[in-house]
Length: 293
Image 1 (tube, rainbow, N blue to C red):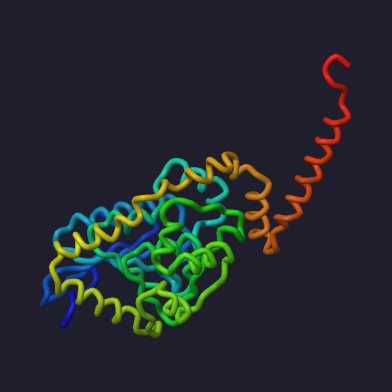
Image 2 (image 1 turned 120 degrees about the vertical axis):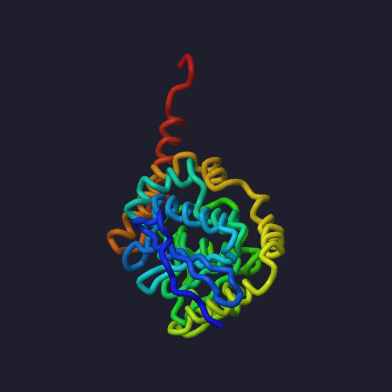
């Protein structure tokens, strides 16, 4: 069975994405492909997410498209948020916009994450929120938020428990370990692992299987599964309740600064200084004369 060549979609040319479609010559249905293209590790910003929305919206409303493939250019799926953008952009992402994870959830068409190389942080939870993940044997998975002082909440955090189980999900999010493609397969984080040279052919095979069944029934089944993401608070609600000024805190700034300076963060030194200051203020308060003294 054969495919037409990939063609860029007229009128939807982007700065940070490559958006293409191709069609199966026997099954007749087509596939849309969204490639994040922002340099070596494809760090994302809200502008990336804006462009992704337009591509996903077009693919989701094209009656002849049966699946969407999401991947990264330059040999890597992505390394999460752009660290320079995050110094201000995370405020906007948390308190004003929906996360990019919402796109696979709202897409009526099945979404396949095709992962090569690094798949870290925001790129990682974007991938596991897709309906399927096909990994190259050189893929590396993991979260990074606690390591760099970047908080995360919203549906995509607890949703990982549905993917790999509660204990493993907490391990992934809290310990920031790195996992090989084979480890990811063993825990259910990905559907299959293939040599990097074969990932495009493997994605084509999965797309052929999706195009061979009823597209309407797939949309219904996908929507039924996607209800799992709807029972949780939106991103930013929990973190704002617990730390309304998190992004201006010394702990948040230390994580970013340590990453830029390529050193280990000194989170507990900050806590020690905070505790010492509280003790100092408490002693001063205890020694102050009371009212009417």
